[in-house]
Length: 229
Image 1 (cartoon, rainbow, N blue to C red):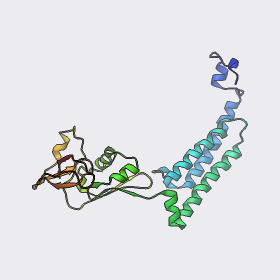
Image 2 (image 1 turned 120 degrees about the vertical axis):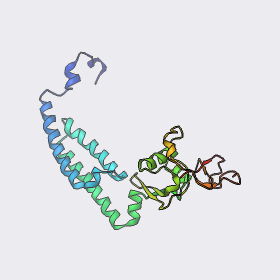
Image 3 (image 1 turned 60 degrees about the horizontal axis):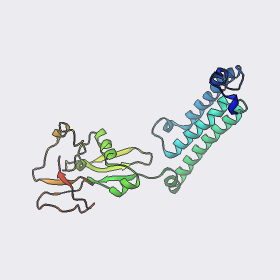
Image 4 (image 1 turned 135 degrees about the vertical axis):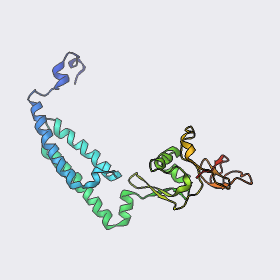
């Protein structure tokens, strides 16, 4: 559109665009039909699309959004092309899921694999770094499951679809608190061990308080705090 054809008082263009008023009715019809097709396709995609999405499912959802908009609003774009594209997105997801079912290698390539973020109460810093996660994100995931001490964590997995899964130790073990240091009232729920132990504030590794430890054997940091139960 040329610059001289644009002015603020042109409410016809602002509200309706260059299409005639009758096109608003067509938009309503197009949107209704595409919406019905989308409902059918979403139903066929399965229950996973209503839950936490994998990378593949998210890609399909974004593709579907791009497919729907032109078919609903652009007058020179037919509905059949949009419907066909939706069916193609369905076939793509179903096909890749079938391929993953038939081949574990293909499944790992398409969906990815889980990652161990905490192992026996110790944060796996390299995995944290490679997945671009912070300590606070890990601590928040643990607090959401009512786990307030790294020593209670046997394993913390980052699943391929982005969720955290926690496997707790059966017995209480001393470890690094995951509660915010600024919340002194909340931290009163912790108990200290009879034989005083220290926890590395960087990775959660625990060692006896005596003799005084040097740098952490795991992460080489020299910043310790009392381990708690």
